[in-house]
Image 1 (tube, one colour):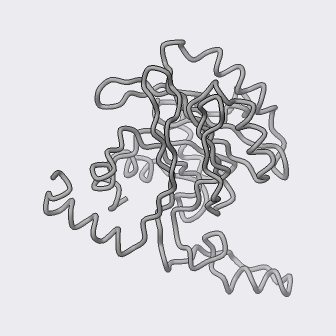
Image 2 (image 1 turned 135 degrees about the vertical axis):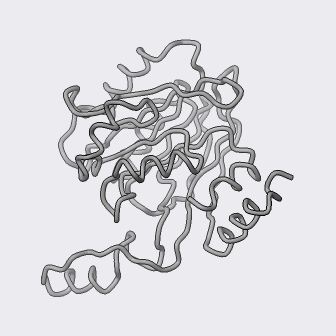
Image 3 (image 1 turned 120 degrees about the vertical axis):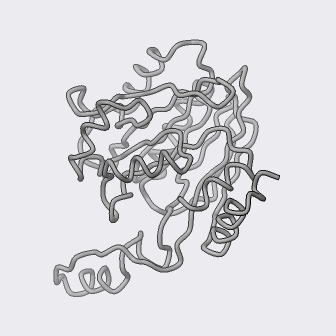
Length: 258
């Protein structure tokens, strides 16, 4: 959170999307964390299979337009399937998320859900961003190819590991299997190494506590042509603790505005 205000200015970020399903001690999101993310510069929040781990978020999901549930969740589930938000210059940006089905909990077909959502989004909203929350890279690649030319980007989340396959498909859709984890990288998927190893090797149940060291912000920057909605560039970005300190200092001194 402390790095984002200056990062937005330095990278000239017009719109920031954060998958925040693990923001509350590694599982779920609370109303307080939601408000903190919005205050620090996030424009829209997507979620995944841990969406309802903290059920106090349900009221936010139903009331606010800058946070979405996976579109292939039941219609009765709390939250909206897609949203349209605007950049500072008024450019509309549609955002929706989908859950994969390979090695994941049973959900409705994400491909049919994507078709339904794209029919509902107004035609004048050309920039369309998709968070595909899935386990298998094959599942992610199928979704990327399926939506190529119909959305601006399909960016994967859930595995916590940044993939090096960022690319732009022939139809103009930016794609990456997984944008990576924002959290402690001296860990096993964000959890304490010793706890995960003990349970794995002995079957003794332990509480997988969140690790604390080597915290990094992992993300992906996509350039999109406003009129066409086609992506023109995609690149990974990782902010470590030292860079975060520098960014925070820039914000405090006002140098980030230069």
